[in-house]
Length: 432
Image: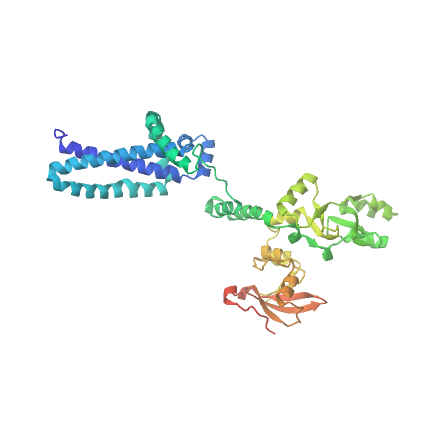
């Protein structure tokens, strides 16, 4: 070593510091790779991605190779720095060399390359595979010995290293991935994807047309009244029942009965030929399952029934699709017939309006973990049937009761423009 020029030793030392930076950055870059993007690049036959995926199949071997190289380089650099210190400053230079080398390695071989690798993992990791892949083959015996010792210690702790663990994303984690995609996925598409994830949390009870709002054909009515109902119907499909909605005879497609209106003499018997069996849906069925049921059974409409077989409402395929893609209109106030915009910016809302529909279309934030209708939400909050003129703060929204009918709120006025956070309104008590 005494015969080697100092300039050569300095050159070797700089080269070793660069090698140390390479190993440190490679480790961080490979570990920081987005696994899902990596799989996509592998499918597109990206060479760097294919090599990186191959190395990451056995992370114990990859880490063993990188640490083997990094530690060898650092120890060799320390030895050369010691020789340089002795030749330049004598024994007193050893401490100086140790301190200087520690600072150099920390800045140039650890912090800087690892920071760059975290910020740009693909730019660091993919080129590094050109060196690491053949190096692993060359140093495989040494890596194998190191891994045998390390894996033996891990097995004592009950940890298996045969294969890298594949971690599947939960629905909530997938939601975060979608919402943080930014400009990569258009905002509307993000909303549709998150709405699909929400289908498992929503049941048919939340979106169905309630029983008291069902429009159907009662076969006990006069034939002229039935014909008039068919002529003026705004629905494509309607249930047909006998006296009571629970006595369902089936469903009828209104268009298919138009020829009855052109015939001079028709009767209820002619109408019965067009009745098709009803499709029943158990209450509490999640929307994601019901969507698949509609697809499998080739139905577009179902009657929701409880455990006793009593009809609770009606759910359609369109209702489920609207939960995914949103309303098929651009003016929410005109789409929801139960909501009427006022000149002062407030809204008159019918008590029968669905809470979920109000939240989805009007972008309100009314609680959905209780009653399904606006009237039910008010009466639950008040714990009584309020009198007209009663004012209250409902989930931070100023609400005034306009009209009641029987045991329900018929109409209420809500002002979403003056909503107060619930934390600022701890009492949330009604005001007369």
